[in-house]
View 1 (cartoon, each protein chain N blue to C red):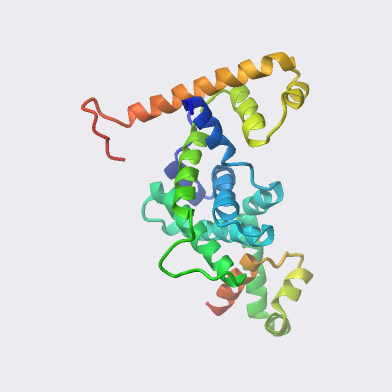
View 2: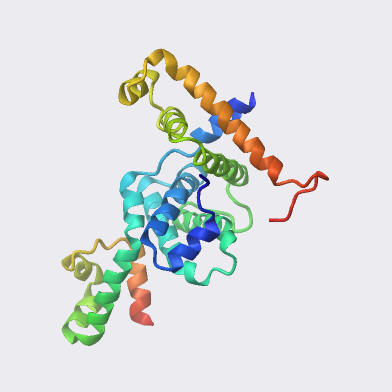
Length: 187
Length: 81
């Protein structure tokens, strides 16, 4: 089963479906958190303020968003602006024209990471769970084995198998975005 | 780096946000409704309006609402409107 698209989630949020808002927060929480803490390296208290401000603005903006598919770039841009404001409030000097060093590269990597995360959501719950535990929560083979009641010796092979599936899924998605002539189909 | 290693690296780039932050963001729609009620009361109650002008954060705490910067900014915007 494929996860709902951003535009579907936005439409459901506008209709007042609380579940849809929760899914939207789940989808972007890691992204907003990573931009604030990894790209702009905000202190935890500032990062938390930015995180809440971004979702508050997103909630307010849902009703008037011109293009429902533009949610992701809009959230990225809002998180950048809020993070820069937080840096300025904390007294760190920032040149107006140039972004802090490494920001563009960091944001590019997070965009790619978010696409991988979205593909992960389309895998089986078992694969999603084991990859999330190992790569995102840094759990050891022993912990994963104990919590999922799996022999520790099978964890590595399962992770490798799920990574191959994720790779195939990503390649499938990439291929379906291109026409037979090799040109990218418009979004 | 193999494609699988690259995917693993990208998965590591997005660790989970703290649960409390996510829970608070999910409660936004309900929190906004609660704030709308407070705004309405402030508009119709002179004493409450004076307390809001004197110390909005304290008023929010007394109403059982955590006065985060986002909440306070939203409420100030609502009261100005």
